[in-house]
Image 1 (cartoon, rainbow, N blue to C red):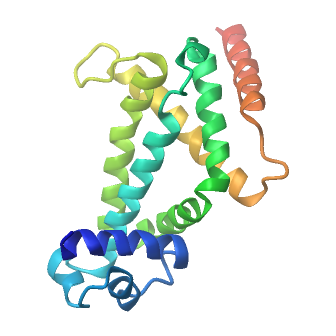
Image 2 (image 1 turned 30 degrees about the vertical axis):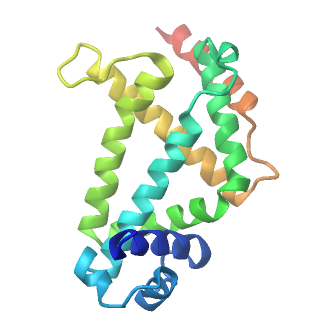
Image 3 (image 1 turned 45 degrees about the vertical axis):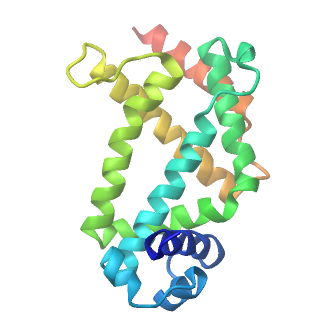
Length: 196
């Protein structure tokens, strides 16, 4: 493994152990067992490295919570797939808590860094159609008839994931279960259908 990869691994470790705001360049260099100057050489700045490490970590987390269960026969309906995904997100609040706290902390950096904002915005835009395709089978290919629907559906899921994660980080004792979210969405859908 070269310095670039070691720095990425070190930055990811620092994010989970120290958080975004409390990680220094020296912390990363020490965790990577790499010379301090290699951060700027390979990534341009500590912030660019931390942002890249955060995006990589969050993308891996997203892939993990979206993956089908080992028993795919149980997830044949949209409702079953959604409940299973929400259950994995809730479970990850324990197993991946340091990463999720660091991710929440890093979002505040977007307010002051156009680079961070652009990176996060690109990641969001890529995730929207992917969620719609994975969970609902809606093609989000640019120019397709379903592209706008895929974007809307993916956006709702992103809002649910973010909100669920925040609730579980702040108040796990009162945060909703996967079944409660499904019940709430079904009630909302019925209300929307009655308005149509």
